[in-house]
Image (cartoon, rainbow, N blue to C red):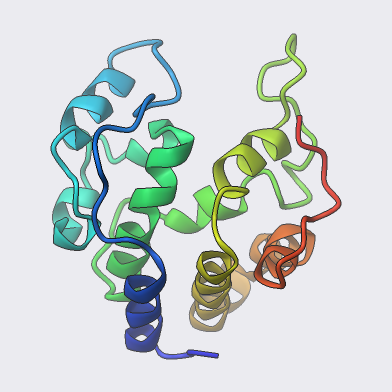
Length: 182
């Protein structure tokens, strides 16, 4: 298991394709408000995640630092290694990719509805985002999350440990977690 930040960055580069072919449809998961449209515009020409500057990632879109909240499922699976690598290098100040990987799988958000009058839960939303990862990609994410727990200790480890146990360890083992998909 890679434990150093540099080793995990190399693992990310080896298991996630660096370039995408064509646009993601949809690029964003919402059409409400201006922010998703800004995310879509900012990422439209970004076809190689290894070339994205950490400073840009930490601000996209337009200084709002909210892109991870709006990227569509396929898009977030493509761009997440850029965010993880930037975090591993200590270059993110505003964006925390850990939240994106944990929300829906930790005890506080698991099975909570995204919208009170709709059936979709945060767990279903998170599974739609992450179930498309390969086993090797899920393993790299586990290594990143374990690194975050080691680095941040009690400041972060509780919800990350819950998400690792509920979802990520099973995915890294090639299994489907026993969690709802809606």
